[in-house]
Image 1: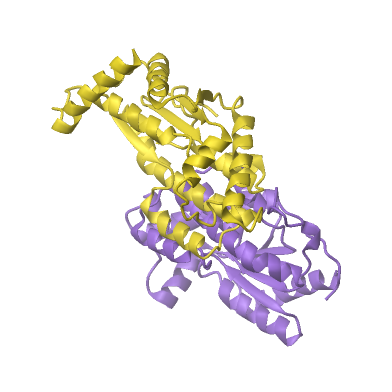
Image 2: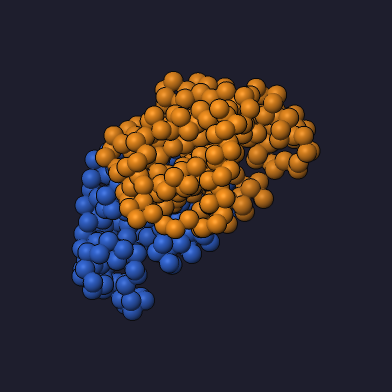
Length: 233
Length: 249
């Protein structure tokens, strides 16, 4: 692993952590449920580790600190939007400080199964202020690459149904009251999420990957792009 | 930061701030009793009291899992829950809401812990400013003595042990409280604190509190439309109130 350390934070960062001390690589895969995120990440981990690269994985709602409570809160749908937003930010910050930052300091490749962009997009769709979110997530380091796996909502429906035979309440945005029918709500919500991601793309410049294609085709493209990032060390 | 009045809420929010041991909780409690006895729609809210986030907070505190950033965020989450689910509906319904600590507690603590001031303020910017904030300023020694007299077992974060100021919890607590006091004083102008002399005796302070509140807020607008029959406990309180007033006079 190269000694080159070149990370930055989006905003204020984390108290007493110097961005210059962060080596390694931070690679983010974003996309809706059914976009193939987890499959792609599993493939990438396999590929990287076979090539002798140490990796670490993080994702949403996996922190020691609040994941259980977050799960409970979502189950009852009892929290209002600012609260839920800050709860997710707490979950993110806990993993950031306990997993992502130490791994980067140690020169690992961190693969993030979703990152701040999903959190921001969800909140934007729910009417939260983009500037407020930007300040909040100023704690996050700027990744080395961000891939957004873009899949048409109609295709997402098919993939989710063939996998689970149901559409998830939150992934359908049922809390928003877009439609009483989960099928319609899912399509509307995913369309809105796609728009929010395109809005964020203007600021955060991530790579939009056409993930309507086969797993292999998408993985090939990801590997090629990640190789370029790693070669640039 | 606009106040609730400036944001066209029918209700009003009064906050008290100060160090532990400054006597602010006693003062706001007595204020609450007075307003209740006057037949005013009043609600009292404490810092760190929402059910849902409590379990995560206490887990984090017990296991010392919290960093300055997660400490700040989990308290912001807790505050948001209380703000959106309790305070906003009450303020929309024309209540006078009394807060024992408000966002300034977070500003002072989190900045003392090393969080950037604008980041913290930004995170809390969804909340309106109080219509009246009273800051109870006691000598640091007085506050410390009140808290430490009984040699309580200080909790890790309460004593600021995470800042590694001292290995002795009491020493750490003293330094930590001193720094928080500095932060409060630095905010005093920015947020229009009314600074109260908390070294003064309790009764005199309360007279001043009630005076400030009635000057700032047109209390008769906040009376219950059809006054609820007072329970015996409150009737008793009326006598106590009169006694208090006699004493003050």
